[in-house]
Amino acid sequence: MHNNNFSSSTNLSSLELDEGNPVEETNNINSRNNHPSSLSSTTLPSAAANSPSSINFQQPSNNTTIPSMDDIHQIDPSPLITSQGDGDSSTQYTDDMTSYGESYSEQELINSQGAEKPNAAAANNNNGEEPHTLSPPTWHDTFFHPFSSTKQFFTELSSFFSWEFLSWMAIQQCFISGGVFALVMSLGLPLFKELGIDASRQQLYMTMIFAPWAMKPFIGVASDLFPIRGYNKRYFALYSILIGLIGCCILVGVYHAGSAEAAIAAGPEAVQNFADWIVICFTAVSYEAATLDILGEGKYSELMRKYPESGSSIISFKFGWSLLGSIVTQSFVGPMSDAGYFHVLFWIALMLSITPFYPTLVGWIPEKKRTKDEPGMTKLCSGCLFDKGSFQEK
Image (cartoon, rainbow, N blue to C red; front, side):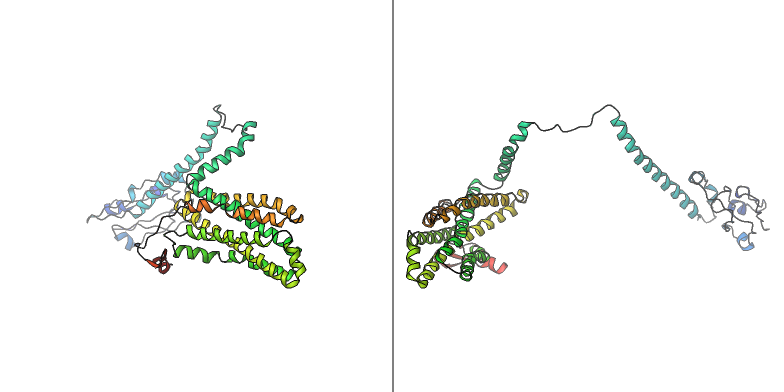
């Protein structure tokens, strides 16, 4: 066996083969001159020449040409496959080049398809088809839009909440939270001013009136843990309405024409006692409004968890009625207070505070009656249960 010399001027496609050794003829590579692994002018070592499956990859010269992608596709990998007597084959280089060419072809196809999409869209627009445009609304649609939107709002709302509960919520928010409670809060300042109460004591009175609203979390927990006659909310609501009615009745009985003047004539102590009774009555009305508000919030929160697709429509419904009641109340409280008709305003508060009594009594608040046979339920006294299971769970 003799060594094969590679000339620097000789192309890879014209490698000189030793005709005397067929194994070495199989191992020689015929490739293009601009292949990335072009060989420089070196001499094949004798040790590599003696190996029947050796391929000598020489270092590229300085004038090596970088192949283009078309040249890569034209490479013939068949001469790189070497068969040996024991059945093994060295195909690593062939597999790499083949997979590289296939991946490049796929990427080229994807890029060409992506580039054709805007052209296809532009061609469709040039076919004479007008793009779809919305026609401007007519005066009829514009004029009746608030009515149709409101109708759609209540239709969707009633599909998740019963009309009884919605009616109860509207009455409670409009006549209690936005009605009697707004009346009491608007009436406090001019009434205390007429009685000659100083500013520091007025602040103390207003804090007492607002106290039931700070108790709302405790009222809600009590209604969940202590069902009265099997209902978590009905009788708590009824008792709060009765407390508010009692407060309004005391106001009507205590404050009448000439009572404020009589207290002022009796001296500062009589004025303070008179003001204390008024504040107690205002606090009773505030307790009614706070209790009904937290019970309503608890019920619609429960229904919102059951029907999450209802969204926040019930909250908008609630505050809408409360705002309506507050606007109407504020419109007449100021003028009547300036005229000194406080006793008339107290009669109005009495009539407003009784409005949710009947809807609450007949069960417009949707809830299931609880029994002592339920798991975790224990009986405290006649008509009152304790939900021990919920208490331990929470």
